[in-house]
Image (cartoon, rainbow, N blue to C red; front, side, top):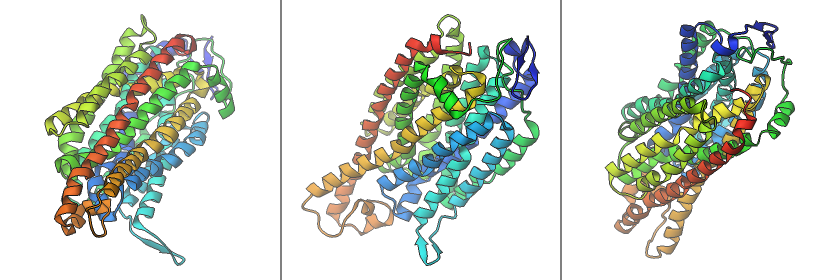
Length: 482
């Protein structure tokens, strides 16, 4: 008996084995969705790329920069993701994605217009305008991954889904590479505002192409023969289903801790390179960030491929391979954030990125693999809500707060410094107005405070790896898609 989709269309008996559509078209769809995900991370990561240029111009502290890159984006991204995913369970997923791509692309471009605005006698600062634009980017990007992962689940059968989702997950690192590869040099050549225009507006074209060329497949097309599906799983029905899946929650804890570290480090990486080694935004992007995230993309793909190769004999590989990777990356980050040698720091960042990002494949494979087909998008949205509300929102501010706290504690103890002097004085043109003692204090503490903060944050990767290993214990029993 053929399974019945939510649209009333019957999936053929071999849909469970082949997936929807011919193989070349499936490849096109997966590539297109990955391109969308690349733009997703280009636009969300661009603020961290231009950080060395925007911070001194707008007078942004490390704490405020952490809030802009973390809470400013992730707050509405986390909240809006749940209703968008619920809509994706019954509405056209391709249309939802196309509309959301257009929204986040426009809001990214508007970030480049961040200037003080007066409304009804009340003036919003440029930083406040930028914060609001970042929230708009978050609203749009909330409509990307939940419908995309649901589409991939119908286009690809369980036996090849891990590799497909691993390929899609490369959008995280490839998008970050492109943000650096283009955004960094544009910032050095024309200014940070132009970087937002150049990388934001092309998303409008992507949105149109997506809508015109991607077909909406029947829901549950790759479900096993005989599967009977109801119309839709509500949020609370999905949550109830997940309460019986302990591996989902331990996995969620692991990847949230990884996201806490990862988003924090990623958003401050260019700033760290600028302070410690004196590179501009463009130089840091090309010489450090591009090789780091290129290696990370390769590591993401290889982990998904390796887990799939081992799946038939070791079903838990999708959990324990990334878990081990998160634990092993810690020593490399320790090297990167304790050395003052540029080449060693680069090696540590590249090796750490290559090893750690396999958790993305586990995140999506387990997140939707433990629930029925009618709940996949909502389960993914719940997972992303947890990751972003706790990991993305608080990772960057944590680094900023700790960095400022370390610096200010050193400043408080430096009783020999005179005059009005704050950490902002250590950046940009203000540095030239300091006396010799103040300049020496900046040289000794401005970079090292951030280094120590990033080192503390990197240690959290190890705890995330432990939680992923714990999810392995119940994963075989919990998985629905096999």
